[in-house]
Image 1 (tube, helix red, strand yellow):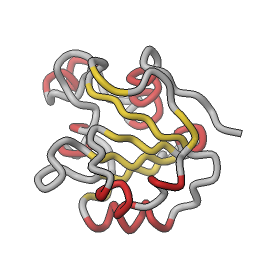
Image 2 (cartoon, one colour):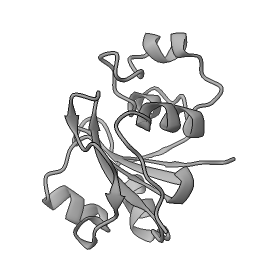
Image 3 (tube, helix red, strand yellow):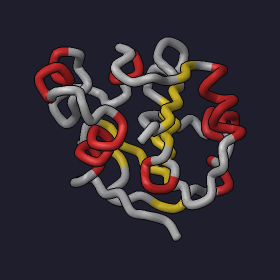
Image 4 (cartoon, one colour):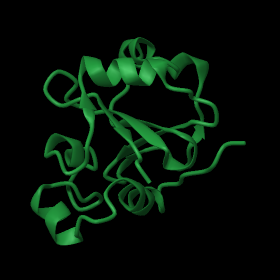
Amino acid sequence: MNFIINKENFVEEFLKNFVPSISIKKLKKFNCYAPNHGYLWNVCEHNLVENLKGKDAMLAYDNIDKTGAVEFQYDNGFIGDNISKPLSRENDNSIKIQNNGLIEFYVIGLNFSWCYIVTHEPYDCGPYFIINKK
């Protein structure tokens, strides 16, 4: 059974699960705090959370168990999905996501156990892969 993420709770859940010890003040300083003109994926870009980047992130995503994973597009709350949906077969590996031209795209493992992130800057920033170590 899949869990549900919606536009209203995504930022809070992402931060609570992947960077619980980082203050909002620090997140804002590093432009990580959406919906405040920041991007959540900056937690990876600024190494505020342990992550894999680029080809290593793609390989990790391709090899992880995706049972119960959901997909969600989120861009500072202005565009994207209102609610997550179960991970589709068309986005179940990194090359498919890349070929589909998706940006600001998050695939989240069951109960935030991991996250694969594709940014709007695919050649400079990301993709990223985070494992929740809780």
